Length: 276
Image (cartoon, rainbow, N blue to C red; front, side, top):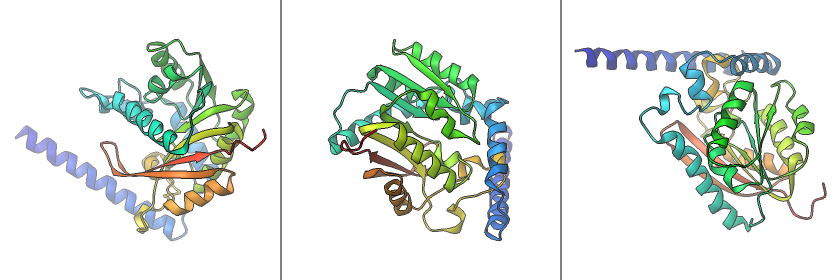
């Protein structure tokens, strides 16, 4: 009986979340979008103030309950590194990794796999506490220097000066779906282009819209639906990469995995002929 009750409660909570998400999407579709400044402020407040196990899970801390009793935390980074290596071979990217930059490094699930291959690893995140956690995880697996860069959601461009130089690899996973708006995502793409060295390669993951209205960008109530905040049609993000100066090389689709659904991984190159 207790197990049946627990399952019933989980289903009820899931149905309530789905109903709330539907409610906010209806409001957004009807014109009830919140301004980017409001969503940015809510995002800043959420990520800067650790609160509970859900926050640690969203920040991809190793000790978050969502990863407990499984190897999922370790597999996230291992699978992303394997994907990057496959894409790099396809793109002809074989330069040494002097600097790797991860925008939204979280608790280090990717960093512990990418940092050992780099001469320096730059971790960018909103939360100073999360940057400390990422540095700890990197330090446990390698001697690669870790450079933490804390950002303000309202002014991500300010991070460029603190990054202090170009990087060879730009990585951002499980981030673009969390940004306030698609227009904000374009700002991040332009930053990525600015900090990537000529000949460098970016791997950027988004959550894609499949044409159904419920998969469009949410644009309101950040705390209650952060993982659905921003989506892009696949072809639109490809063209957006072009407008930001990249040469899109490939896209890898993951319709569903253990974390969520509708993931698209884009390989975006900065041409070697470009001048910094």
